[in-house]
Image: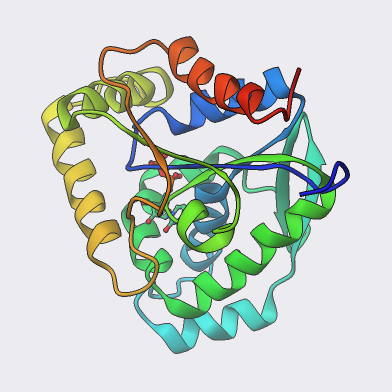
Length: 228
Ligand code: CDP
């Protein structure tokens, strides 16, 4: 790594393990760009839902990938995107996308398409990128890999609180069951399953504050001489 090459921090882990909050805060502290790779898979899913494409129909999904234009841009300290000139905004967090995203993310052509976009983002500068396969597939050579986990009940509590704020009343038992289902799909798929990347620093954040987790990352970067 020379002084001009971008530094990549890979943060992987299951749903609601705290990746987004930790990655955003770490990126802000370091002056790096934040990347939510899940939002990319959600964006493709949003487009499929909008066009009535069955998320399991590989041929139809492939045709969509050929047809659309996914454009990258930097906004508010993060790398984000437009699909055919449109910003899907909060629609990517809605139920329709939530239910189909794991099926879309399991499609090989979708993975090839998104992984290439994610790698292109390094041209914008140093990144904190969160996802499921960032340390294992997207940037396997980065020395800064983290696998963030938390107990399923803790994750369901966190996700229910988020949904409560955005969608009103939520049923925590239903949230736990939906998280387990998605974890199961993400961990068992043939292509780029959720796994602990070789050399990843494993952090179980149950009972840890966001700042404590961010500090683990900052301390590693300091020890490596990336930051003073
Ligand atoms: O925040 P949450 O865990 O609900 O999901 P997300 O990070 O927005 O990711 C949504 C879905 O995209 C995951 O359930 C995975 O199926 C998929 N994904 C993936 O396959 N690979 C990534 N690098 C990121 C997300």
